[in-house]
Length: 172
Image (cartoon, rainbow, N blue to C red):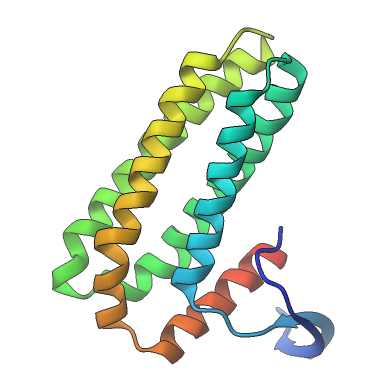
């Protein structure tokens, strides 16, 4: 899954569990602001929900749902594993981070419910609509209220460093 455009080959050096230096070729991307990265994921999810709404074939809807599920899982993983730890110590956003964790749990429950229906080849249109409304509303709230606060807390370089961590976590 890649949300960025320019790629360059580079070398990543790291210690293995035995303390030996290991290197591997990796794709490095232009540094992208973490918030722009998340907005790209939000836009992709909206397009996937639009496609799911337009299609009437169950097999197509099932394939689109699997993409939605994968992207939502990645979204939650990078927020919870990278972004939230970077900001949760700031008192002014602590409550927002807690609410975001709760929202992620709710979305995970919805995904599991839809996954169960899909595995039984049962219709999922009403459940996908609820998931769409939940996710799109949360993403809109993130962009309008949370992102501006994060921009105040983290400078450009910090947000780009977090964006790089997102990429490594996804491509890793």
